[in-house]
Length: 328
Image (cartoon, rainbow, N blue to C red):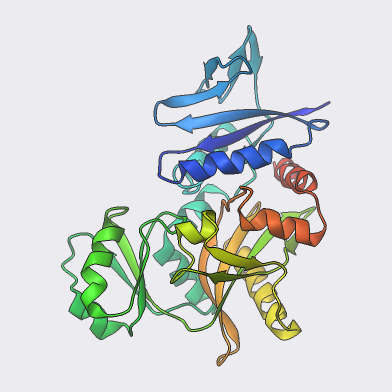
């Protein structure tokens, strides 16, 4: 008997546009022989499913169910395709935990922790993972550009502490441009992370668990046409993404081993994507971020890596759903 799956998309942030693109890819590659999949839009105006004739049907939030033509539909699992809040910061995960509905992403605690960039690098550093030196700023705390330049070596990256898709992020080459970068980041969040620039090549790798085994996808090297891998580079073609990356075995082994260690350290579930800078002089990767709901759009990296591994996206999404059901 087929299981009934909710594919959640949308969200309450500027990343909702990416969520809809991801959901489109996932929906097109869901195995309809195994799953009855319903697209659920989590929107500030309400949570609803749109039928084939365009009718919007509200979700009953008491038990996350639908009532269609007098028939109640309960979901066996949730496929999380919602970037930003509330799908990537643990809020939806906590809600589904209360209802006992399994889902394909990290749990509430891991999602909330990794959504906070400062807490993520602090936990990683404590476990011996290499990370950039950084400062954690709060809106109104009075930290000046001079204080930052005296603590960190230029250039630096200035980014909202919570959020993704590089929205509000800047690379700053000198102290004179710090105030504008801070203002931009604080428009997106009341906390900001300022990190020292790390010289090296940029890589990213998808990691997931299937049948109890942690699997690393082929590594992608990112060569941005911009100063860094920003929103335009990620989603509008302003970067070259080489999958699999053209690197030697030692470098590949270091990245794979570090990615697996991070996945286990943070108790990750489902598919995550981990970003690194590989510093050749020190011969090890520096972790940048953990993306617990990585993009699944046609332009996104994880679908490229899945195909480079020799899997179809249909096989991949089936594996994610099956793993979530096995963990119930």
